[in-house]
Length: 338
Image (cartoon, rainbow, N blue to C red; front, side, top):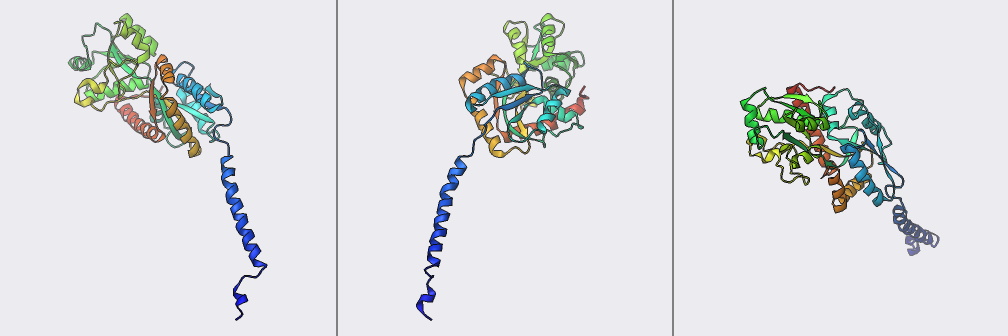
């Protein structure tokens, strides 16, 4: 066989070189094309708060959103969509375009709704992708100074010595404040009658002597604690609050039955479930970053909020655990959503 039959023809050789050149050109272009893709966000981002202006979710959204807007060089707009205990706004976000431009300002109360309202038009645990938690508004158990208890152990002893003789006020029926006290009663095998109020009215009545015991958001009671008009016994959060580091937590009480006690009154961000993971990761990372900034933490403190960063995966676990826990306590205490 002639040796030239084993070699590519002159016509074939240029084609091979051409194919190689084309491949190299494509490889050179692809990274540039990928790099040219715009990064999130390229337009305004909407945070949907499901409660009125001035509450923890709204304040979290406005303080966090203002800083993220500076970082992203895009406006972050807080939109208040109230109704049905937060369900109206949550449903809106669950059906929004899953592109990261519409996010839910989730609150612990959404876990309460999921536990108590099985016929919601959305599933909190399935129809959303957790992004991050950002803040917490600690709940304090406080008493009028005439109550003969200086700490949680003494107060628990008082409740045990007078079963069904004490009552307490919270910030409303089926709120995290209500669940905090019912969980405390369950763990300590004590009893007390619940009288739902708003936080502001509960604090005013406790200061005025019409009430002896309240479970309210710390920020609403703290000025009166500092003035000696109320006595703070314990915070429901896992850790002490930077707002009042001298107030112990339930876990600090030294009572074995409360060593793992923690009810967090948190706020953060959820996205529609089909939102791309890279968008979610970016928002999570940026929330983590800005929460480390002293100026932002100072603004949060001024609004009565503690930094409470939790990653998307940690948020998912906490929401799931809270829904299950609130469902159990509701069954024991006979709590129903009004």
